[in-house]
Amino acid sequence: MSTATHDAALAQPPLAHAAQLSLVRRIARRLRWFARRSPMSAFWGVIAAAIVVMALSAPAIAPYDPLKSDFRAMSKPPSERHYFGSDQIGRDTLSRVIHGSRASLTVAIGAVVLGTTLGALWGLACGYFGGRFDIISQRAIEFMQSFPDLILAMAIAMALGAGIGTVIVAIAITRIPFGGRVIRAVVLSLKELSYVEAARGLGASHLRIMAQHILPQCIAPYLILATTHLGVAIIIEASLGFLGVGIPPPTPTWGNMLADSLNAGLVPPWWLVLFPGAAITITVLAFNLLGDGIRDALDPRLRRAV
Amino acid sequence: MHSYILRRLAFGALAVVGVSIVVFVVLRILPGDPLVAIFGPEGFSKLSEAERARYMADLGLSDPLPVQYLHWVQDIVRGDFGRSFFRAESVADMISRRGPLTAEIALISVVLSWLVGIPVAVVSALRPNSVADNVLRFLSILFLAVPGFWLGMLIVLGLLFVFGYRAPLASVSLFDDPWANLQIVIGPAIVLGLAQAAYIARMARSSLLEVIREDYIRTARAKGLNRRVVVAMHALPNALLPVITLSGILLGFVLAGSIPVERAFGTPGLGYAMALAVSERDVFVMQNLVFLYAVVFVVLNLAVDLISAWLDPRIRYA
Image 1 (cartoon, each protein chain N blue to C red):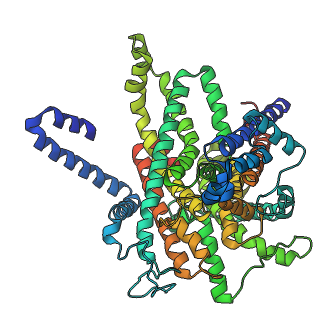
Image 2: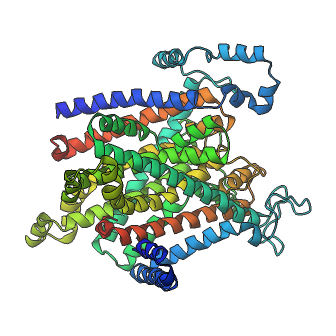
Image 3: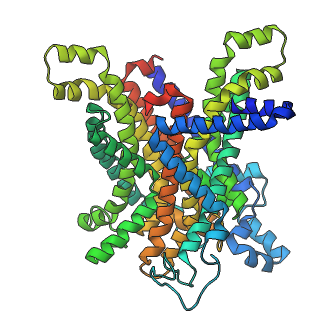
């Protein structure tokens, strides 16, 4: 709905200002409606937004350089100077936790968008064309789902070698089957509807039917899928970092920090364990609850299920 | 039923073949030189061309890919799972020595997840939207968000600070010293069990809420049975069908989850071996362990499908 308003704004320059204003108002009204409908999701949505802002402005808000070691403050517990303490080579934990959100969010959003999009396109093709292509694709998807997510991601990340792109690809591949299955099911049910049949009867090409008539109906399930998978992606990213196949050090990521803490001595200092893990938990919680709220708002039929 | 079993078995066999191909493609064909993985980028650059070629030939990596694949499958069929680059131990020994611990952890965690998840679901479903329901639902959402390995690290630290206690690190078999063995497996089992319990509670709650609305439940109440009997004898058995399927899937995810969790606890199980192999980039150990885990996952899912079909005739005639 809001995109329609936006298009109108582009089409009619003299009215652009008024239209834009109503766009802002519409969004505000929608948000208010969302907040009233599910205050819990709205609250966690605000936290999720705050985490995104934290990631974007990390260099501005972090008190220290996350990579700089201070040899006068090694393995120090939380204090006035270092609110979250410092690690074994004197890096400020708070700054590293703040910067860690960048890696986490980049990987999670990148992987989920890439994986869900590829899966959705695959599912669209399977559902629309059916036949042998569909049968072979379904088997391939089942084989991919014969691996627990983390194991497949580990193997791919290890084979491709360290790097942020690798981690994104590794996690994205584990997301493909979900997109493929859900969108395929949606397309299968849409294909038989009379308006699609009418379009076919009027001689529309396959590409046109897919793009004009089927794709728009897939947007809601796509958004639901993407948001509900963000949390899982963050946990897999942290696990890969913890196992040493994530984004290579010294880049601060929450998983790397937890792995580092195990090397900090026989007993890891509690502040090196507590804060990065708490950051993961809060972030995943925020995205999961926001995702639940978005799902409820976009698809009321699913409300009963959870 | 027979034809259903045969169909599922055939699919299981096909899945094992498919899985082996995926593993081979991921670990052998994707870009990334195994010698770089073994020697590290620096070590690799110090090797001469001739040395590189010799290592590749020794490892059987200069054969054509289909030949390499067949060799690998042959080895596995013969029970030869290769050995680590970095340790003298063969992968087969590793599996037989460390596997039982991980299997114990997985089984205990599943039992725990039912013991915790089902009562929670019943309490929630009997009074939907009550205070208890909301608290329990929030807890289950919370446990979905907590990374198991972090919870594990916190537990290890907490026990150490408060009681000065640390679980034994050396592997002990259940039959030699059950008490020491229990101390090793209980931590990871609790962490993994709680994570599963969260999923199970969610699924069982929604499934119970659906079943409770059915006519036969109203009939049972109408003929005067008390609420508890109706829930326990009439509603639960039907509500648990999807939970059984979910539990089987979760059991597979426990195998994966046990990798970082065992690392966090320092448990001498197969998951820890896998964590080591992946951090050392021990390609051949990884290849075989990933394959093993995937086959176990396929077999578990097959078993769960057969159990659900046995419990619910609607599935086998579908």
